[in-house]
Each structure stands twice: as C-alpha cells, then as structure tokens.
Length: 92
Image (cartoon, rainbow, N blue to C red; front, side, top):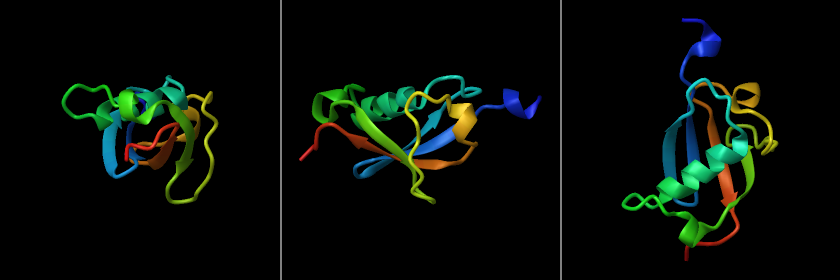
C-alpha cells in the first residue's frame, strides 16, 4: 500500500476529551475533522454540537501551528498527529 493510501488517524482534543478519528486517506477538510470531533464529544448520541457549537479554530498541539480549516487533512497532518479544536460554545 502506498503511503498516500494508508489510513490517517488524528488525535483531536476538544475541551477535556481526546478523540482518535480515522480520516481514511485524508481527503476531507480540516473543518470536517473538527465537526466529527465535536459530534463524538457526546459519546452516547454523537450530538456534541448541541453543547459545543461548531469548530472555530484548529491547531497542532505540539507546535501551536494554526491549521487552515479549508485545507485537506493529508496536506497538513500525518498519521498520529495531535490537534486541538476550539469551539463556538463552552460546555460548562
């Protein structure tokens, strides 16, 4: 299997939870990754957007580098990368 055809797994931190998301070959946008992480924040119904809203900002945890929400995942992230998503609403 070519490296570009391998599954990309990204660890996404949303507030107090880290969620591992399989991105396939990573052709989705970074914004999609934020939306999926927010949805999975609610482990029972996958409706995290009801308490968190939408992704507003994503950045790599190790470097603090801001990610362009419209960039494709495989252009800016690699398997095992960790990112943080800031949301439009606070769950508390």
